[in-house]
Image (tube, rainbow, N blue to C red):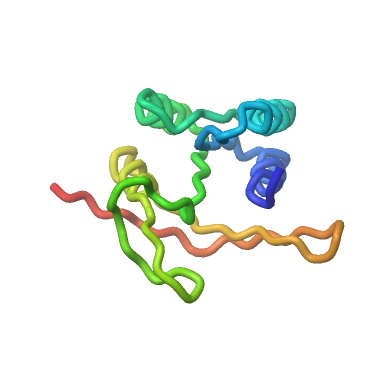
Length: 132
């Protein structure tokens, strides 16, 4: 359970219906543990696989909020950006979902301070333009 998981749980406690998009972990025991922890909080998690796009769009239409980590490196060539003093190959998934669903992107950041305090900040929404 990382900071983004805690941010999702906090958002859900304020009535925001969160939907996590996550990759499967290489270790199946770790994967099962993380997904069990996420589901125990009432936060729905969908795996980033072939059916993820359709399911995520359906959940967005139902009023859920899709949470994705934008700093996960893409397996294929995508967007080469400056990131934390280096270069990173970041996927386009977040922008694609926002454009297809017609919803804004709300950049958020969660971080830990010490052992027990967490902070959360949401930035102004980013509107994704249609390519058509």
